[in-house]
Length: 287
Image 1 (cartoon, rainbow, N blue to C red):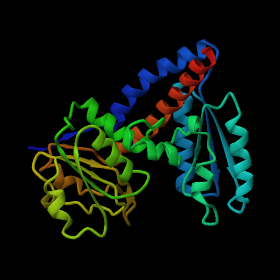
Image 2 (image 1 turned 180 degrees about the vertical axis):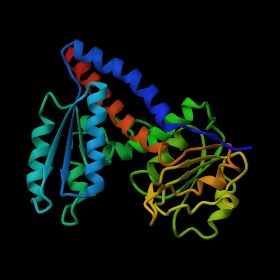
Image 3 (image 1 turned 135 degrees about the horizontal axis):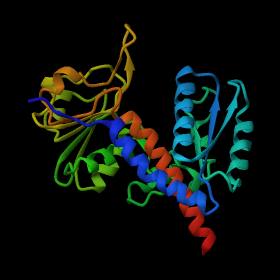
Image 4 (image 1 turned 180 degrees about the horizontal axis):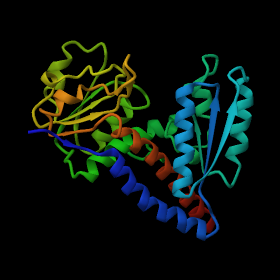
């Protein structure tokens, strides 16, 4: 029997509808949620991502503005821009589109964002606070995955969750969030010996490696929940994930497609975090 497909587009649409009502309510009260995006350079993929984020903001009622710098811009100019945005009362969320140019110090740029405006959840404070379960904003992709599991009533407590990929953006925060919800978590990487040994024991398998179709059917436990975070372009131009979708869907219980799975949820959680930041701003102003 084929796995149930977790439709990220449909789920994102439903979640956005709920948060749009909250954005409209804020706007009616005189506070329109605002998101500022900082982009450095002319990375084609980044330009597409930023364009999608701006369009999503418009659809949900969030004011957005893009601050685009040339690739040879000195890092201090970007830091000055962030400092101004930190004090801008009309901007409730700030994100820096990655990757930054090689001559930039990523952590220095990210940590210059005010914690209460770090809607991407990449500030060291927010990442570190995941350990205690008290982060202001969870990183958007893991947050989207957790929302997917929740919306499909997939039990996490007591399950074995295996994460393939140990990035600071997905793998590590994903592990902390699953651990917080009672899962037993194993993190694997490209250096893991006998990767299949671990993936075959996973009740929940999250794959975020950037390696096209590396997880095959024989690596998956029958009935497992398979979350494919990867997005890759094959030589023929076709998009695919890190999971071999066609074969794995015949083994898994649930599976996310690529495209149309985790991707739409990532942008959705960015919108949610921005609206939440605006709500907190309103609450603090009324104290």
